[in-house]
Length: 271
Image 1 (spheres, rainbow, N blue to C red):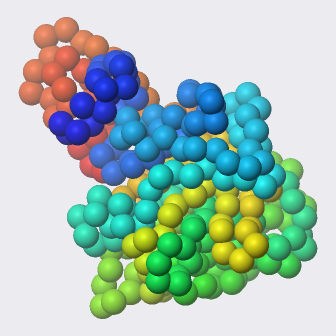
Image 2 (image 1 turned 90 degrees about the vertical axis):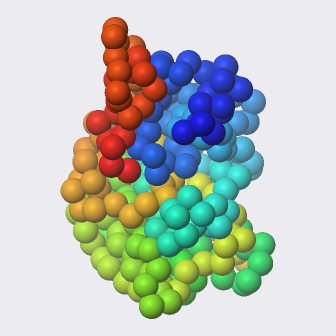
Image 3 (image 1 turned 120 degrees about the vertical axis):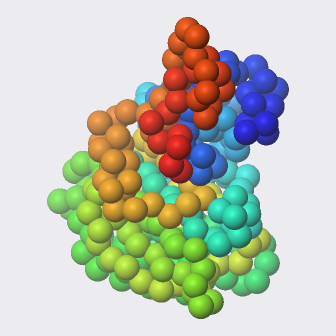
């Protein structure tokens, strides 16, 4: 809590007027609230993990258009493991629209850059078809063979995607993917190495696998979400609302589990 307060003060943010996220949110990019400035997308979670844009990413009103570039979050998988308390649970979520083709190669909504260990991280379109592939150590090419988000029917509108991973158990992790709030697939993953850099819109394996399309919001969390939490998150994204609304100052406040004088976020006592 002290670190979060320091970050707000150092960045000249309001303490009560700032966006207040659930405790597990380690990076949250929402251009409708904080537009791109100087090639940087501000992390509105107040943890200071601002994203640096590289390559083909352009700003268009309330969203970003990806063609051949990425947002470098400055985070590594080891940061999520540490923030989760060591168990390795995490969640990534986005409100997005794919605009590529059925036959295009891999297209990463979230992807990694390997710096040690030779493992990879990827959540996005599989190569050559419209399946959803997920790689978190091991790769499951058809984690969801028919997600309905990359084919011609799915490409006409935006969707939410949530990939959430459990804490480690018996040497492996359980991953689940939700599309538009609905659980689509569950599988087992060996886990990517801690040195993997985390990016939005690009995986750096091979010649690179950029996302083709639009992203309105992207969230990275250091906790596993339940089905009801995913449903609530989907509703927020689909409505175009912020997952981290601003606190409002109140008079005579005391004994809140957030700074005195501010109304707590409804999720503050949970994640």
